[in-house]
Length: 304
Image (cartoon, rainbow, N blue to C red; front, side):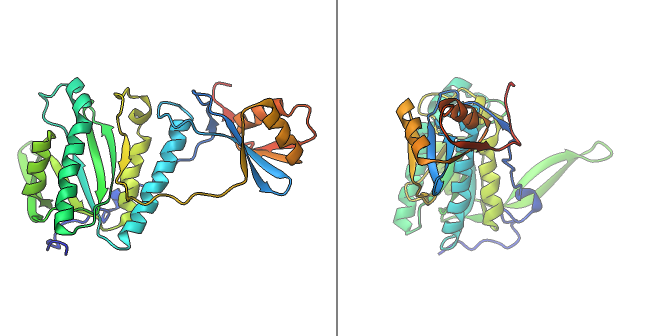
């Protein structure tokens, strides 16, 4: 049973600004910093494809973007599946105030969020509420982490409250405005007791497509790829029951040795390369093979 929420509250995903569909189109081909191996996969008959694998390192200029696209897809598709049976809620979590040192925030944030989620998971189990979530964490302008969470969980004490803000009018006078928001004393208190800040936001998701894409776009923020995070840092994490993307079955082989490439030459008459990097490696490895090699021509290798 969901809480009785005033219809005056704007639902998350209702306004156009929340429907920010992030484009991941990329024309420049980048090298893998960790030298991920190449793979060959059967397309049809004697036609095979070659692409470089993903090293899964966020700081890799090539594979960081590739991993972000995969996680993006899982978030959007997972939220679609959850929405078919459950309401979704959007929660923003923050660190403590400005007195908290950056080093302490980076060191303790994972522990604090783990502590909060353990408490919320126990509350969900006690009340019979489905527990599933995805959390994307990024650094704010001051460097401290904060998280955007899409979840099926909601506190039992959600009520309509007001958020006040101040601005200056045309005459320079300070004007206070307020808008209706959801508030939960339980969520606020548990966040603080877990070690997080007292500032939080929670809203009910109206349009899952817009909300899931809004959260997922933070995966492409430059800090995701450039910032130095401590060991064990979780840029994105899911509950164990969050839906996964279906695996694509392919007849594939890893190309680790010269013998692997020669085996590909025996299997393929035509080799289609995924990008300019794959083409360069394939043409070198199959330089004496009787294969027709093709590749996309709308890409350039970074730095060349």
